[in-house]
Image (cartoon, rainbow, N blue to C red; front, side, top):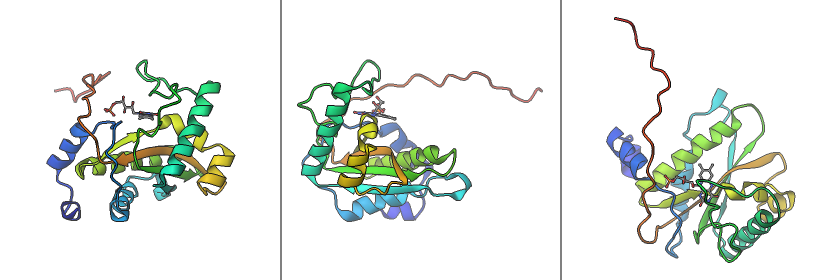
Length: 200
Ligand SMILES: Cc1cc2nc3c(=O)[nH]c(=O)nc-3n(C[C@H](O)[C@H](O)[C@H](O)COP(=O)(O)O)c2cc1C
């Protein structure tokens, strides 16, 4: 990560932005504590409204606990209306045999204390920092929005994740070594609604 301490060059950053994908297949390799600490370091350098730094993190690398959490998520989405749907996809969460964390060995849960209108924005900016640096390090990542409701359930939050009651789960992100090729998801060109240039 020497290149990061030298300063992130624009070219590398833009390449990481273009290369980042939501990875949904992971090799069974674990990530070291140093790697996770680098990702968290990137996260906490995100912009933060009124310099509040509202974020806090839970790192889950215990496979049994990940399976348990995945089962709680699946149980929740199968019997209530919190089923996430994106582009007609349910991320597979309606298939109970699946792991909502896509087999990743690391889940980083970005949490926040509720202390202002921009707390959620701060955490999502931290999430993007984390995912871009993961990409630059050759790692895959994926936001698991479908798990937010379940992870905020009082029993899961307190008993399984040791998150104090004054914190809420905002952004759960899995990270790991990608397995195989991740398909490219295209983007529409920017929709510019107005561009009010200086009159000449
Ligand atoms: C707020 C949010 C929630 C998401 N939740 C999930 C999820 O629960 N499971 C999943 O597999 N992908 C999830 N994704 C990933 C999106 O499906 C993905 O970003 C989108 O399809 C674009 O693909 P790309 O990230 O590869 O460019 C989520 C993304 C965001 C931003």
